[in-house]
Image 1 (cartoon, helix red, strand yellow):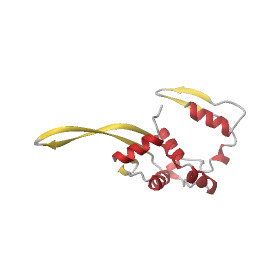
Image 2 (cartoon, rainbow, N blue to C red):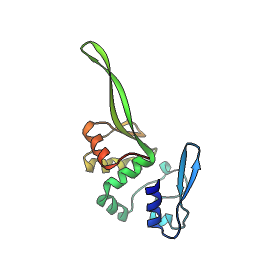
Image 3 (spheres, one colour):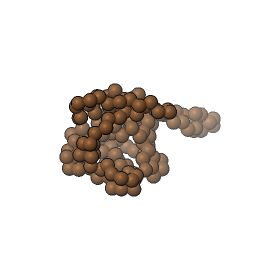
Image 4 (cartoon, rainbow, N blue to C red):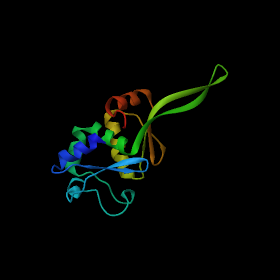
Length: 152
């Protein structure tokens, strides 16, 4: 949250961001009439019901800093957790645990932006559901751990 607030202040200097406690979370807020200039995808209605397309200047930033996009998406609408399953080993059912990253979003456009970026970074992913992306391959989780880091 501090990194988010610091970034907002660097982008929009003049006043600090506010931390607003909510049940189960804390919002980082900063009011400005300039947000639509920085995020032209913003608009009325639900984001999964309107087109979300990056502007050319935003694509340049994503090309230059793809991990920043992935980290921001995972930290906002994703998580890293430990999943488990069972397997038969030598006739005995054994529990097997493994780390994975999940990202949930109803917007097909946002999912496309993330999956395209993950593909370019060599991260293997799959859809657990149409609105839920999973990264569970060991090498891809290690790559995500190296660049995304923990969500505080």
